[in-house]
Structure formats: C-alpha cells, structure tokens
Length: 150
Image (cartoon, rainbow, N blue to C red):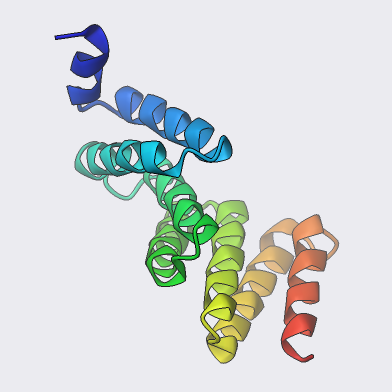
C-alpha cells in the first residue's frame, strides 16, 4: 500500500483539508472527474470529525461550484443551501453572502427567478449589515438583482 493510499484513508480534519485543496486544484485545472471523489471524501471526513464547522461549509461551497461548473444546478443548489446554513450558524457573514450569491445563481440557471431574488435580497441584507453597503459584494448583488428585472 502506498503512503498516498494510506493518507486518503485517514479521517482527520487535516487530511480533509488536504483533500479539499487537492480537489480545488483539480477543479481549477478542469479535471472534474478526478476532483469529485476528493470533495466527497473531504466532506465525509469533515461531517464526521467537525460537524457544522466553517471548513465543512467551505467544502460544501466549493463542491457546489464543482456541480455548477458542469451545469448540475439542482445538485449545486442543495450544497450551497447547506453552506449558507452553516456559515450563518458559525458567524461567517462573508462566506454566507458568497454562498447565497452562488445559490441565487444556481436558482437563476434553473429558471427559479423569485427564489433567486429572495437569495440575493438576503445576501444584500447580510452584506450591508456585516460588511458594509459599499463592499464589492454589495455592488455585485445589486447588479444581479437588477438583472432579474430585465
């Protein structure tokens, strides 16, 4: 057994973080099929060892992006929604806003415009409350909301 194979069998937050980083690198390179099992394994480990934690939510967010990149918007939607919930619970407004934006985009891509509007409005509210009305996210969210009206 190679040391790499043994590493992938470890169930520690550190091994999950390394799998997450490797999955992101593969996704960025367009190696979607190679990235998927790494995201799945990282998420499995994080859910078991960390539960509702910012690292778990970050993996959900990026795994959702993996699905979205390939046009699997309904699958992405579920992961983004879980990420929003966890980021909200652990006090990470920046990432909650990012997750809401991605959730809204997945809903738009499915033609669920009113649901998307709700996500964008929630993202804007959180953004303005915690990050400021003039943040880069606020401008982006306003543009997405305006795009729903066209």
